[in-house]
Figure 1 (cartoon, one colour):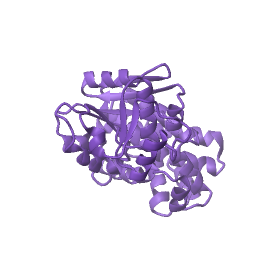
Figure 2 (cartoon, helix red, strand yellow; figure 1 turned 45 degrees about the horizontal axis):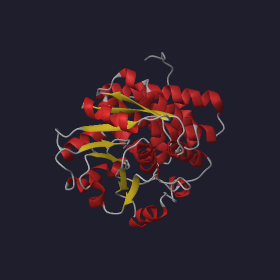
Figure 3 (cartoon, helix red, strand yellow; figure 1 turned 180 degrees about the vertical axis):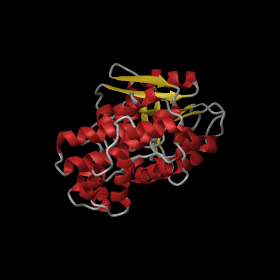
Figure 4 (spheres, one colour; figure 1 turned 120 degrees about the vertical axis):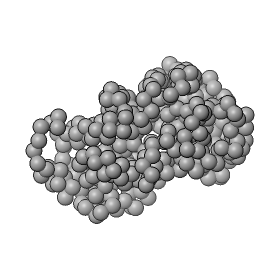
Length: 328
């Protein structure tokens, strides 16, 4: 497991509880990994949840990957390429790579599987894991379902078997693009949902934003080659609803903070973890502009984050748009 933040640690815990021997290491500060090795828990991100005996922290990336066949990378989208490059020299010939990274690569507009193909080559078995999950609930063993997409059916099924248990159910898919697009765009929309609620606009406005946001997510996903039904599933609608409606979502909390008058920097300092939707908003706008895909909600979130628009001004722009058929 490369990436020992809250989500990487939660997935490591789930895999260990389901019977796998797990090494947790990678790209966080050395002192944090050393503390986890000594304390047998991730005190910074998931305090009070003890590591099973078959989960160990590895301060060295070389030790973490030594002789390992199946590797799960859990880093923010802007760190995926550098993490894969760093891991490359330690991979065995039969190593298989999965990631739980969400988002387009900034400026290139590439999805994670495209970045991985450039770094790892086209022949290595790869997969992506995504869906409606909060790290804290997975770490606590609460019931959860998510999706694993892979073009290698055997690898996808092996991962699903390894991570599933009495409290966790993994579904498999072959739709790499759909699963990755859902994970990228829902974070942008969740910032918008947080702002909507922070401004006191009520339940009607929230559900309108989520529903029309799903249209935008589907529109871009299908244009990139995703299957429509994936957008309606766990990695699309499921992840969108979860991230927009619960305050465990860092992206929703970013929106709430912006609605209260805080700057992006002040909100980020308050949240103390990477808020993926901030960078994703810029990347999504670049991809949508390139493909000439209309995404008005995502665009207004971008304007607030990068052009100084106020949340109320953005809402006014959305409500003042020309009326049109719902399915247009």
